[in-house]
Image 1 (cartoon, rainbow, N blue to C red):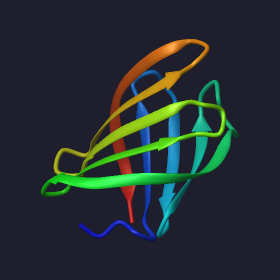
Image 2: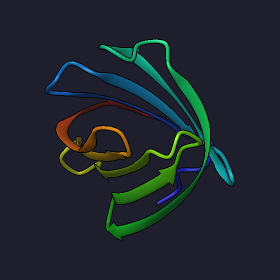
Image 3: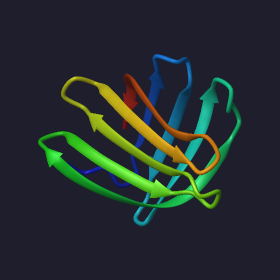
Amino acid sequence: MEFLGNTVEYSYESGEAYSVTFDQNHCTWLCTKGSMQGSTGNEQYSAVEVAPNVLFVSWLEDSGEVVSLVLNFNAMKVYGSYIDPASGRHQWEGTISYWG
């Protein structure tokens, strides 16, 4: 599955929404809705296609937070987790609204 140069937009059931663009070695993310709205970052990421049209993506932010995503383009679902050294582990489920 080709994802370089593409952007994915998704929202979690919690109301948070994000836009992530994937380049060769980095992804740029932007929180577009929710308590972190306006937050952005450019991270070195790892990604693997674990099944047809299903990507597992992860990155480590400068703040020490670890982000992991499962992007299921067959069902247009996202499963996200991040580990924050200050507040622990958080998990969400949501919907992919855009890929391209």
